[in-house]
Image (cartoon, one colour):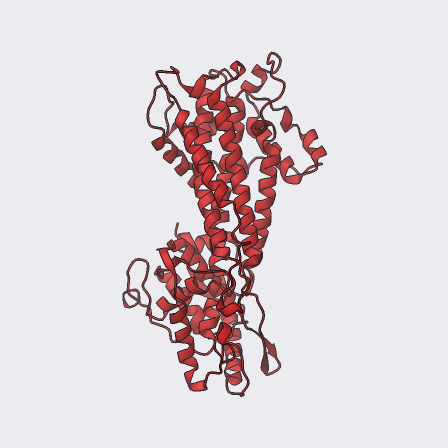
Length: 512
């Protein structure tokens, strides 16, 4: 998708949609003229400080445990270049272009808030790279997420200096870009920040929304495939439980099933008293997941308006106060990312349990055949799809182990408590990727289960979702490889195909 209107960085917080538009849709970015004036004024004051004889961290001193080493004025430009060169120590596969672009946008936005002391040229150079579609090659491993995402950001800046590779091998000259020479403090300002973990988290949340919508559709579809009850979706019971998100999840499921012919078909003659927890308790599990994700979203949105540099500069008359602090520390985003992985694990875990129940067909009241096979024994049906789902859920469970609680100190002990937020982001991203396939498997199995109840129809919205699945996945009347079907439905989820099944569903607050 191409954007004709530029995003203007004016110091205000970014939004998740804006980050996605720049990172994935190449929306152009520019700097507001008032920001240019503000940066120029701050830079003039900073230049005065460099000659007043006092020590200022990272401006005329070394870095980390070397902070007590004073640097002569004629070496300050070399100091900044050496900082970037020495800190570009990442390893591993390169980060994808959208993650690097999100990181660069957040870096530029933070600099434009005017507390880092960089020249306007620095912010404009980052935006020139974004607008030219040239992306630095950034190794994925190496940041401990505390003194900023040092190594990944250093690889970005090394490319801006003309000394680091680009992701597609393009040269600066071919893109009309010029290498930047860093002045006092600018190297430090460019690598001190949570921009990798925050940018990555932003993209994760954007992707999560599509999977959440598909998960709700899959849950509702499974209820009718299993011939389960809808009594546990009653607004009255969720009102008594007093959980807003659980109430909303139940409301979504009720709306998705509204108009189902399958639900009333077994209201009076079904001897089953209660359904398994993966059906009956799904609103509470989904509600808990939604609450975790909501907290993560709030944390990310705060980060999109933050300045995470160190030291920070504040106007004080004709001069500046230089304040050393820890705004670069990643814990405010690492902990929500760790929690997000736990939520994702539950979203996947309860989905796999419903798939197991549908395929087991252990109760004749489901009106299903084992593994949804049309000839059990001769045909194995979707038996192994559940194995795949179980394997994915097992890995997701491992990814739910938090990274932020495992501390390893750095910089000779000066940096003695790190967040490891980039690992939290990587785990959450991987868990979400796996969950996409888990939900795809549930959609395939639930849609297949509905076929056993024809000519009865489920709710119109769910039938619409089944129609979209059938457009790429025929029914399994006989055995064939489920792998292509899983891939095709995962693509539907990734494309947001099921989003409109939820967006127009009314989910009132508890008590409404």
